[in-house]
Each structure stands twice: as structure tokens, then as C-alpha cells.
Image (tube, rainbow, N blue to C red; front, side, top):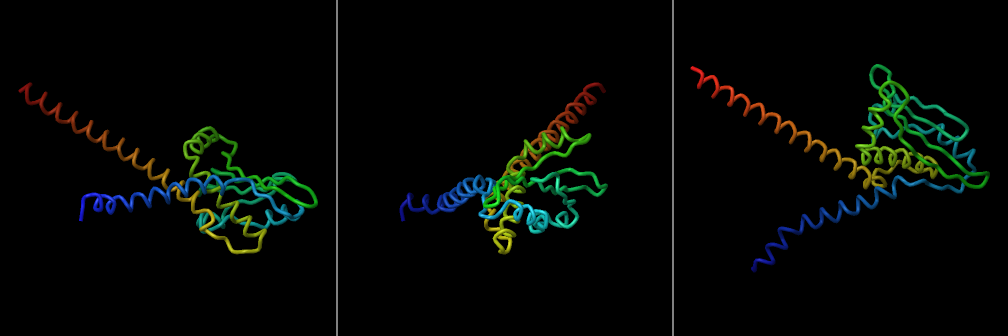
Length: 198
């Protein structure tokens, strides 16, 4: 067998992985878009008010999330920490009339002392934020179309969000390794200085 065959065989998994990742990135944009429905806006608002966050994505926080109507057009869900402080707010805003409705999803940093820090965090982690928006959109779509929540429908956004977190973890680990190396170099330098001062 020639070299080209073995190279192609070695590279094949990487080509497939790159294709899957590319498809996931394209799908992620679609999964976070506004969605339109041929239902009266009042009916869509009623469904929003009865919809919980998907436990498959939000875990136990889905059952403890605070859920209320902000105004006539907006339903909100708040994720809170163990002290009861809100750290993420998801909203679904409707526009439409008696024949059709459109739903727009957002994730916001709640007002409070940590607002600026949270807002910066959300901007730096936009892919993860998009995966949460996609999860809420899928949950609402499932409720409106009377079908089960389907994780496959948001896999692009979830994959993109997960990959972004892996990249951040890698950067954090490199920074920690560089700090460890610097500390080690400093310790060696101090040891040499002590040795030479004797």
C-alpha cells in the first residue's frame, strides 16, 4: 500500500470531525433564531407561561428556576444560586396578532451589583449563551407543536457551546502551567542566589 493511502486513512477521522464541527457551527446559528408560529399571540403567551426550562440542559436548576411574566409580551425565567441571587435571566418575547406569533429569545445579566461582571462573562461565552437560548427555544417549540423535547434539534448549539468551554479550559490550564513554570524558575533562581551568598 502506498503512502497516500495511509495518509488518507490517518486523516479521514479528522476530516469527518471537521465536517461534523462545521455542520454544528452552521446549525447553531439556525437554532437560536426567532421562531414564527401560526397561532394567536395570546395562545403562544399562555404556552410560554406554562413552560419550564428543560431539565436535560439546565439540570436541577430547571425545577428551581423562578418563572414569571415581565409584561404582556415577555415571559422570564431566572436562574439563582444557592443564596437565592439571580445570575442569569432568560426571556421569551412575543410579537404578533390573532393569527400568528413570533418568539424572540434573549439571555440577560440581571440588574444588581454583579450586573457588569455577568454581562462581560456572557459576552465572552456567547457560544454557551447561545446553547441555553437554543434549549429554551426548543422547549417552547416542543410545547407549541405538542411533541417531546428533542436534544438532537439543538446539538449544533450545544456542541459549539461545549467546544468553546474546552477552549477556555485549555487557556486556563496553559496560564496555570505558565504560572507554575515561573514559580519554579523563581525558586531555582533564589536557590542559586542563596548558594552563591554562602
